[in-house]
Image (cartoon, rainbow, N blue to C red; front, side, top):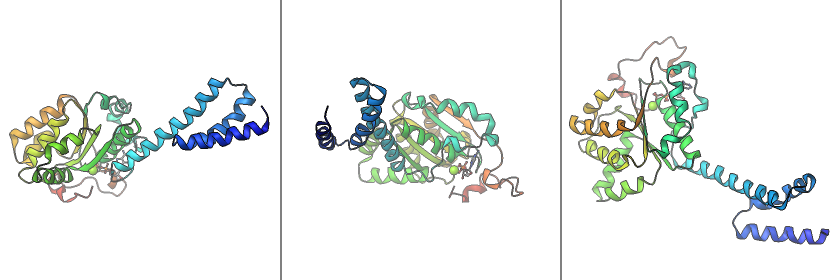
Length: 265
Ligand code: ADP
Ligand code: MG
């Protein structure tokens, strides 16, 4: 093949890649063509390599978009987690990192005192979900109640719950830091029910399940909700002193009840 023909082909690749909205193909096609000639690849090998670059770039940018859309408070990954501080749950978290819990619509509940890494691990699981192609939304329990309450007042709760079911993962951070207003138990129950056996929830709480009735202001609704949450769930209990207070000569925080003021976790 002469140089003229090849230049024309490259021009056409530019045009065709733009038409396909796959601009990275241009760069990959040129760069891999040399490699292919040097290594004597078949046409099929070359085409597969070019397309593979485009697909993996798309997946990576899709994950990045999903991570940004999830609205995490801070970007924390499972890889950043210091297991020396929580060695007892290492295996349990590692088994979740495959992302299989998402396709099985299983839930994860992270329990433990303030500063033990609940939000960090919830965020890390969220990032894994985004990388596995799931849409993710992160918010505190208080924010979820506000959001669902607004939808309810506008007669849009069923539509909102249906929309949220398209998210593979909903993260509810800080159940229990603040007691809820009256309708909250019911709104939350509907969120949990609408996702039950369809899509995953990750919840974090500084209270054991026995304290949830008090937060939701309704023991019966809380019990029914917990029942659905834990039916298919991994419950991970974090222990020990706050990671935030490490090395500061402070052994523990006041009890969880008085730690309610620390809502900016
Ligand atoms: P919680 O939600 O349980 O109150 P966070 O997850 O917000 O705690 O953790 C508090 C801070 O300490 C965060 O900056 C978090 O990244 C960090 N942190 C907590 N535990 C660990 C850990 N085991 N390894 C690394 N960082 C940690
Ligand atoms: Mg937290």
